[in-house]
Image (tube, rainbow, N blue to C red; front, side, top):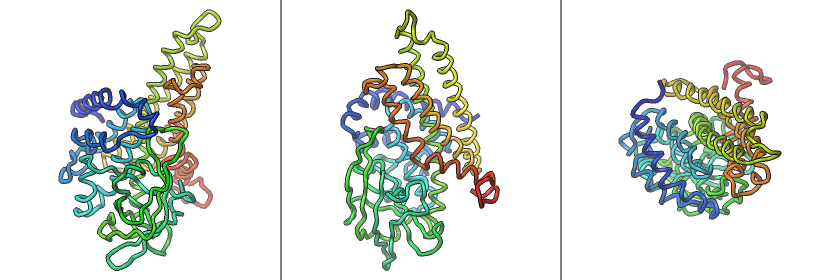
Length: 388
């Protein structure tokens, strides 16, 4: 059994926090196109929410991954996508590799304050010419004595305008593209780091997303996470947790939209009866609810295997793919049943429609997920079965 009474205790605390400290402010943050990350993260850090499965010696709770997954699922109860995504970057995208492979020194400097909520973190992988194709990044960290000198740029960086540090993937050698990269913790206040602009996005409005440039940014090599040249491998491992987080965060968000749609269509009348009384409507909503439960089962199975120490690349990839596809199908179907009101920004379904679209793009596009799965199946041209 994945969850226990201990999980339920934390779950109830998190539900109370979301109800009292987040959801009452979501509409305001959506209109402002940003939320106060330092203020919110400090509150969450003080309650232990930012380090459930992180090492105790750096302020975490030292629990297994099932607790992080439980938190990801509960964050789906936040009535927008931007805020939970920003929290997920802090807990499951920018810090897993640091927690697992970083030296004690670099973990004290960057992980501990991130767990406490004193630092806001971001993850710097994607570039204008290298989104899902991680191997083709151009950002370079040249060796200069005990330092790296970094030049390049990153794009679509969640938390980018508010972050205190970035977990940066950069080329640190001239070798093969899968073995010439390193992950480096770079303070955002470093000379030469420029937040060029805050991106104007279709959805995830309450989350700040930045384009960032690095011009001869000098950082000590001790800020590197783990071994030089292992950054691509570390990032691929980190992607397992990111993709599972992204899928799990969809579950309650999808259920919320189904519930809202049931309520709206039950009360909306057309041609002398409620919209919900039409078979196509209540059958479709039943199918959508079934799809959510199937996705939940897949995610839970992957989490159980991850807790057991197994490689879950295959299942995490499937979950990420399915979550993105379901988000598009479900919100589109529900929005249709809201009619004209669904096309206004004042309804929850329109926000969900805009926010959920990112799931099929961020953290690896659907097409990349399919390539990974086909490679593992041995059906991708030129691939051997079983190689991820």
